[in-house]
Image (cartoon, rainbow, N blue to C red; front, side, top):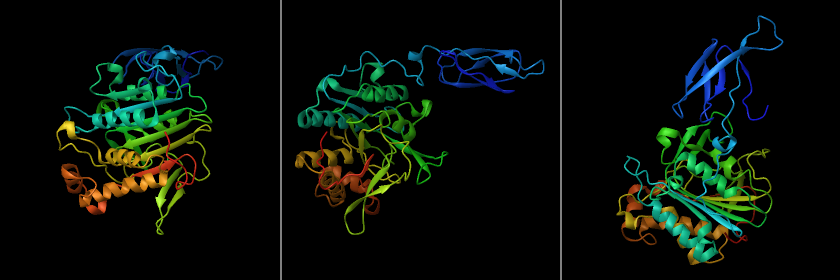
Length: 370
């Protein structure tokens, strides 16, 4: 059949927009019709023909609409923008900071989070500066603004062509949300989602989509660290194992997908460090001048890594939690930042950084390396 959509039998048949290739179109019965695409706002002409070999009484079918070239559809993969970094070496990173400028959802610390993470990766872990892709609203290149489409493309850029020994980092700083899970594959009954800058127009990016984009493609020997500074982010990339603190004070792994392998990488290792549990909100510093703003999670993460080079995952997680909790007592988050965190989150609701992984390991012995 080549690059065509299959035929669909129905009185209100299905077809695909012939311009953007992204929207399924419900078409009324009849000899032919034009249907408006809600995504690209253009008309698609739908022709019909009788099924072959079914006799005169055969129901009408929607004629398959030839899709646009594969490079123009998200399902087949849009072309990665030429302005994205050309990869050299074994390390690359995608750093996303969404500010939602001019909206009621505006955040002021996310661009600073991206800058701080870039410095950490380059200075402490040897990431080449020209192998780091940043998506923020301050970028002049339209392909580097954190829209839904650009974020999906950038996630594909991060994982495409990876080889054994590659180390990847994905940072997202912005809003997150929860939606009711209709597939019944979430322990708590909710999907977690990232909010791109145009989420009110184009929609959010669900945890299932994130997992499909940056987790499942990773082959053996490839390592990805996802650092997610957003609300409801505990299991936001749907990794099977979540590390929880037991009643005895030790970290232990919980399997969120017993018996399931569909959301695991293809032999690689994926580890996520997120700012809070799925049912929690993450502190931001929107009340400060933009030059001073930084997320509480990013502050604790960077401070913990810089304070103890070669730290283990267990010590990193404990140090992050201690720094955020002590912020309520003004010891480790001093000044206006500590005051803001204490004011915005009551002691009973202090955000708790989370650790998830595609496989279990000894967090007290495994060193944190990017």
